[in-house]
Length: 354
Image (cartoon, rainbow, N blue to C red):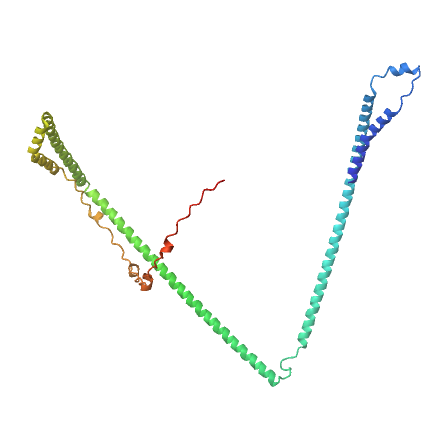
């Protein structure tokens, strides 16, 4: 903060002092020049007073800046020296404090060790001074009864603890047996499922092998049957084509004859040849070839492995309880009176004028 204040005061001084000097110069009356000095003053007066004032201000400003830089450098050097001195002092203080703390720690540990040894010696002396059981004074009947009760309670508590431990051991063994039985049943069920899956895969493999062997053995027969079937189909279609062509020619001739007839002759001709036309249609429908029957599937494609029978608990379910009669029927609904079904007509309001 002090450095900032010094710089601020220097800058203010450099800014204000030329202005004050210029004001003093302007207010001062010019001195009257003698006749001998007038020519000498007029000769070098090449610059105006304002330029001289500006030049003086610039020189003063440069000088102030140089002084400020020098002061800043000096201040920084002083601050660096003070910082180094302060760090050295702090280091010395830290080392001194650490040494003092180490000495105090060692002293405290020595004191604690001495107190511990003293307490142990005191306990040993008190333990040696304790009287032996045979030397102790005898107990009165009341103390003997209390001691007997305590012994009985201790024995009862020990017995209960042993019983609890035995019961806990039995429960633990029972849980372990149940867990082992459950794990064994689960593993057995898993093993049975894997065996069924293995058997199913073996059956599928056998069927695939049978199919392959059947196709390899009867491939020529199957191919010949398919070729013969295709030839038969082609021949049937050829026959049907020829029959259709003959019928088409007949129909074309009949159409030409019918077009040459009058309507009455055409009707009489249709009535006369009705049975013939119907017989031709029925014959055409009868001659239509039946769809080819699919080839019989081999034995390996007709049979499949038997489905496993579901257990009885999965097939039957317990009968559904019959609902009582009071939950099936409800009382009849009362009929509402007529005054609740109809309402009076709404009155017509007069038009409102805005």
